[in-house]
Every structure is written in structure tokens, then in C-alpha cells.
Length: 221
Ligand SMILES: Nc1ncnc2c1ncn2[C@@H]1O[C@H](COP(=O)(O)OP(=O)(O)OP(=O)(O)O)[C@@H](O)[C@H]1O
Image (tube, rainbow, N blue to C red; front, side):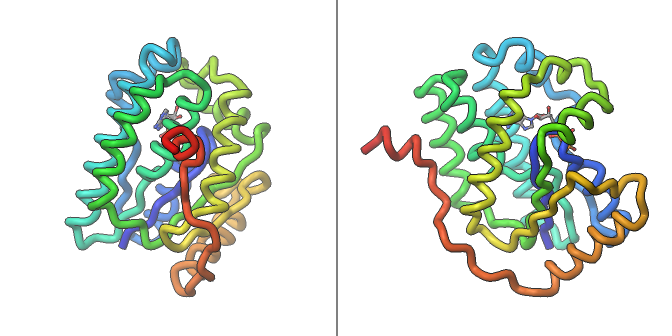
């Protein structure tokens, strides 16, 4: 079984993945942050390092997907391969930070990978507004994230909204985490566990719109 936690920077994915793994006895696969050779450089000079960083995350996320698909364990993944392409890479391309050639090369590799990627059985979207994201990013105090702009976070949130509205890959549980503190508050954690339990048990209605990348299609037509 494959569970995935998705959401913007600072939404609280890593903490929730750990809590759910403890509760349900799942294994956790974390994001490639420690030892990532491009992340700090990327935040210092996005146009210079965007393509390198995207390829690095894509490679490490694809490794995780293969690991999950080859395993018979129950695994919770901290962020999905879809977010790399449909949120981060697309945002960098649309913002003029990643060139069209780089984006098309990246997308070509992503599309090839997608032929062998199976969707998670359940995806949990942690929906958070700016104040929550900003305060959690500040609180964890990573040097390289100190200069993340509000505009970058807002653009990512806009992509997250579009992505989750048209998500068709499988079951999606949307959790508004603005008022939740599942790290320190046992009631909040119990609420989240209950929501996850229900989502695992019941079918969710099919979602209406297919997932597309409009900007790319507009250009190639
Ligand atoms: N494809 C990507 N492109 C650009 N930056 C990325 C990409 N994937 C992850 N990142 C960045 O890598 C870092 C990941 O850190 P981390 O694993 O703590 O996740 P996070 O997004 O901050 O999650 P959370 O606080 O919800 O646990 C963040 O700065 C995040 O924005």
C-alpha cells in the first residue's frame, strides 16, 4: 500500500508522515533534503540551478516510486513525483526561471517515467494558507529557506490548488491544516488519524476534470 503526503513548503508533511507511520506501523520515505547537492544553491540563484535541482528531485522521487512498487510493505511517502512536475517545475517555467528548452527536456523525462508510475492508493493534501506556511518555515529555521519570498509560496499554493482540484490519479484526502496542530495536540492528531482511516476504508467519488498542463499544451498547438 502506498500513501503519500502532499503540500506546500512548511505545510507539515514530514511531521505528519512520521506521526501516521508511528500510528499505523507504516514505513516512511522522506524527501532528499539532507545531502541534496543543489537545494541551498537553488535558493541562492534559482535560474542557475533550477534545472539541476528538478532533475535531482525527479531522479530521487522516481527511485522511491520504484522502491514502493517493488515492495510489499505499507509505505508513506513525503511528497509525490507529481508535485515535482506539476507544481515546482511548472511554476519555475511559467515564472521564466526555467527556460522552455530545459522544461521540455525535463517534461520529456517525466512523461517517460510516468509510463511506469502507479498512483498512490491514498494522497493526503495538507492545505495551508500563507501565515501558517511562513510561521512553520520560520520555526524550523533552515538557513537556505530564510529568503523564500511570499510570492514564491503564493505561486506554489496556486499550483497546489489547481493540481488538487483536477487530481484524477486516485483517492485524495484534503485536510485544511491551518487550525490543526497534530504535532503537539493529541485531539488534533486523533482527528487526522480518523480522517485517514475513513479515507482508506471508503471509496471517494470520481473527480471530474482530467489533469493537464495548459501552458505547455497552449505552446505546442
Ligand atoms: N521539485 C522541487 N523543486 C524545488 N524545491 C523543492 C522540490 N521538492 C522539494 N523542494 C524543496 O525541498 C525542501 C524540502 O524540505 P522538506 O522535506 O522539509 O519539505 P517541505 O516542503 O518543507 O515540507 P514540510 O514542512 O511540509 O514537511 C523544501 O525547501 C522544498 O521546497
